[in-house]
Image 1 (cartoon, helix red, strand yellow):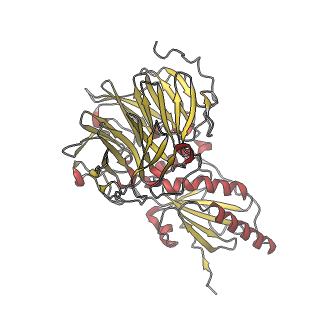
Image 2 (cartoon, one colour):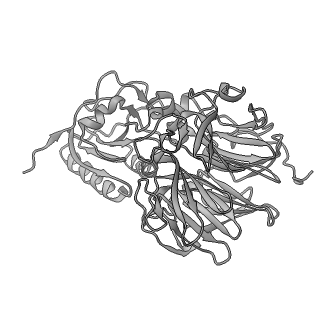
Image 3 (tube, helix red, strand yellow):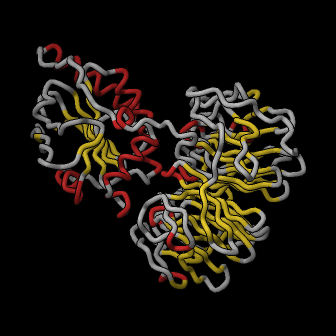
Length: 511
């Protein structure tokens, strides 16, 4: 018989979030416990959260889920940044901040995410790494509850928690905006944690709110449609069509501005588990967390963060499929069929090449368009654990989980998200220099490196101005590229969903 292994107790005096006091395995005796080892940059960790929420709700009287946040990036070690991630992803279970990976090591964890199952009498029963474990966890939890209930040793008393969102509710007009898009008809803002799109003039006057403002997957008019954590957008000016990477729904959505209608054009609403290169009819092909997209002529080019690939959708034939990326997670250049990416989260183009913010390897990549195209790394560490904050040329550059990218006149503007900076890269010389921000997170309107941001994630350019989705500041920042002066856009009359009634929306956006 395999010897039973006692679950190691949590270290004392470690920070906890989503609870007003530390927890211990001793006080949780009588309950099934799942330790979810995660880090908030990791797309696979984010995919597990809905499964954990399902299990928490189903077994609320007998299961306790504890997130063990074991940071990868330096920026993720900061307690305030972890708190913001908890708010962004609406995490409602207690989270232990695993300083120095001590808990990770005590449980011999090797991969993100890993879920450790602990029995009501305090022993490790099993563990599971990766996504898609809801059914097997459900079955195991049910078996444990039945077994220990028969022994009379199940604790059916709920654990009372004090959640971060109770003390810091999201009452800002925008909530963690992930991307922004500047166009000839104004700005489109992905109000990501409010699950909606905001359309404004360049002076901030709200033209339309697209979507109800709660997570869902419903097509229809602007007041009926629902999204789930929308991110990147691209615009077809000729047809007045906005395309959206509806990340949480694993879908692409189309917004007809003239008729004020939203409809799904790709994806099934269910996350794909197939990471091998493949293609098919757009509405029959499941996707895996599309994060950003750009339209070039009749095609959409899509950064599929969840499967570490770039995809292409032909808008005429409605076929969609993998363009490059094997589905592995790393950084390998070369032929389209051999190249490997790591959570691509930003995409832009000069019309001949695609440029990618490849976030988990903190590297900027270029991808040619065409049969003989190549994938090349422009700057960054080119490895999952080579990151930092260093200007320079090519591989000597260090970025930290870059999420946003915008091509302007042979240069690439980069949202170096976890360094709280905006950097400029020459696409030919591969020289990368800090232009805005000073590494410290903050919210300061100023010039150049005196300005401060808090995990900026999206960039867009229009008419000499760079617009920044300053995600953790819940704001859109505006940069005059002639002076490098940073200001914050005001959005008068915009309210959080359900908090207040916005003023009558302007129907004629050209006035």
